[in-house]
Each structure stands twice: as structure tokens, then as C-alpha cells.
Image 1 (cartoon, rainbow, N blue to C red):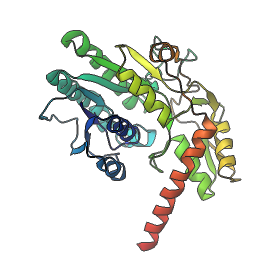
Image 2 (cartoon, one colour):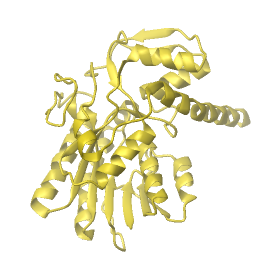
Image 3 (tube, one colour):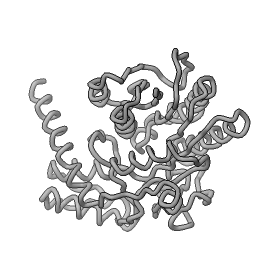
Image 4 (tube, rainbow, N blue to C red):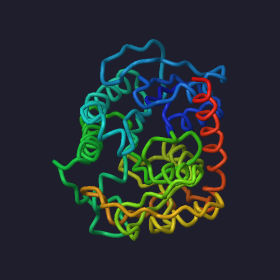
Length: 319
């Protein structure tokens, strides 16, 4: 069995690629390293079944050999990245999705789109079921990511309806764990790095806004089961346990044994007030639900960031 995974050097893409490799698949990992990590790619290169292709999926590519699956994970995915790379984010969500679907069509392969809970925008229904159409500002600063993913979902369903491509769409909720970049701007990585360095914990707004955080191993397991399930429509994969942002900060401070102060800053434009997945479909159809609670997941994640910061400090001392 052989699959193509775009964005394979990214945080989540590398974990997905490793799961397929461990399950005995041959994996073609495609990445242009605009936000992906050479370190992640090196981990995957330790598997005999992995082949790295350095390429921007927004540009067309011809691939030799059969493929059983195409999983499109390529995209800047954190606010820091997609606000700094707005055009690239829109291109990989549109042209990149089109090219990935074209490969799946040509190879007769199953296609899985990595979509996002951001398609729900600042939701007015809580928790969010897959039937909710969302509340998205189509021209705000976050729209480059939100609308890229909404377009990608529409393109995926069009390829299914018009060309008969066997498609899957996973709506991924906030995911965290090892291999996140320390400077990626996500709230978990921000808080852990700030706590480990003894810096103030930066909280936007009053910290009452909520998110639902899923440990990466759970997220990957849900996506693995969805890829092999018989479901065409979008499916939420995430942890339904909901936490206020200031609760997350408190847990991280406790687990890092740090007493940093919390620095409250203005809430960014269009930042969602709440976010919580309804995973009823995943539970029923996939017999899946997350197993790792937030505190346990943070405990598993902190050592990775400690190691990364030690490497950065050592590198800085040699310059």
C-alpha cells in the first residue's frame, strides 16, 4: 500500500506520515518547507518506506507508480504562519487542493482533506456539529485560512460528485503535542515556551474564551480511522473537553512549576469566543474518542519543548 501525504514535514503531517509508515504503508512525503521542519523529515527518513519529495503542491507535479491514498495536509496552519503567508495559504488551499485531487483522480486513490474547525468561524452554535455552516468573516485577517479551507472542502465534494473520487474530509480541532514549532504562535506552544523561559504568559482578551485541545496521538488515531471508514461527508475529530484559555495557562504553569504572571493583551480581530467539537459521528461511526486528557497531554509535551529550547540555546552560544 502506498500513499502521498502533502505537508509531511509539518507538525500534524509528520505524525500522520509516521502512523502510516508504522502500519506498513509506503509513504511519499511532499513538502516545500515553507513551515515544515527538516527535523521532522529526518525522523521520517529513518523509515525504509519513506520517500521525501521537496515540492510546492500549489504547482502541478507528475508522480510515477500507483497510489492507494492522497492525504492533503499542506498548509500554513497557525495564525502566525497564515497571517505572514496569506497568499501562499490561499494558494495551497485552492491550487494545492486541486492538484492533490487531480493526483487522486489520476491514480484512482482515496483522498483525505485535512480541513479545520476554523470553517465554523466564531460559532453561534455550541458545540459545533458537522451540519453547522459556520459564522465566518470572508474578508477579515483570518479569512485567508478559514476561506481557503472552506473552498478546499467545496472542491473536494465537487470532485466526489462530478468525478467520483472517493473522498474524506476531517475537520481538525486544536491539536497539540511534540513536533510543534516553539515559535509557531499556537496557544499551547506559546504558553509552554513562555513558562519554561520564565516570561509572562501572553493571554489575549480576558482569557475566558474557550478551546478544546486534542493530544496529537488521539487526533492521528481519529484521522487514521476516518481514512479507512465509509464516510464521504466532513467529520469532526477533536477532544470535546472544553477549557478557558486562562485555565490552560494555569495548568501549564503548574506542570512547568513556574510562577510567571499573566499578561493580558487585546483580543485579535475575529478570534473565536468558543470552540468545541460535537464528535457524535466519530464516536458512532469510527468507534473513536480521545483518551488523553489535557493535563496528561501537557505533561507529555513539555519535555519536547525543553529539548527544543536547549538546542536553541546551545546553537545561540556557538554563534
